[in-house]
Length: 241
Image (cartoon, rainbow, N blue to C red; front, side, top):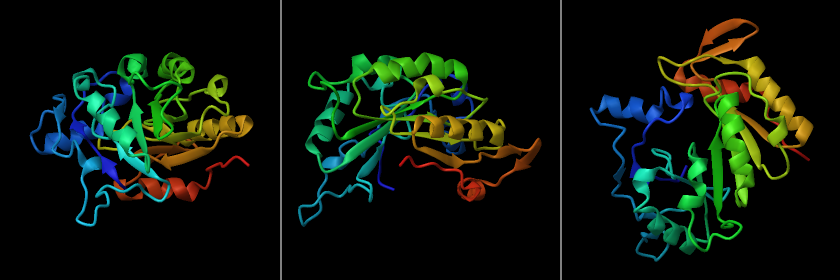
């Protein structure tokens, strides 16, 4: 998976951040995950090999996964983001996918030539509970974005997205929380989201079970190595026709 993290670190902003994987990983190395710093890979999309081709190539779907160790719209990166937009504008051979919990900062973070959205930018908005869905999704859906995905991960409760699902949404992704202190994810919540997506004709993916997975009233402890596998085995993903 081609990943580009131009900066690292974030500050917690909502309930979904409680057991953030970046914080867990940084704690193992005595790093302060709340400190946002520019990475040495900042200009990675511009780096070329001797044959003149770009070192960072998109995956088979044309995607480069961007800023997965921070939030692309974090205010601490405001002085750097214009350089990122320049690189994204140059690399029309790839679509840059990033996920944000700060969609309320959208208008302050996009470039002057954004218009109705760059064709090679795909934005995912995280909504971990009903409160955050009802706050973030109206902002997300009203923003000029060409490609958008709703991310219900970590899914912390039953969430009703019916009012927000249309052909303006490329996909809904759901998943539980990983880590030793993970909060439980109930399969019934996941199925409810899948059914909402089917009714609206929006593709749905169950990405991972999380560490504590409830099914039929029983809680199962799922090892990290099996969380994606078990989600695939559930075979509940939906692709619209």
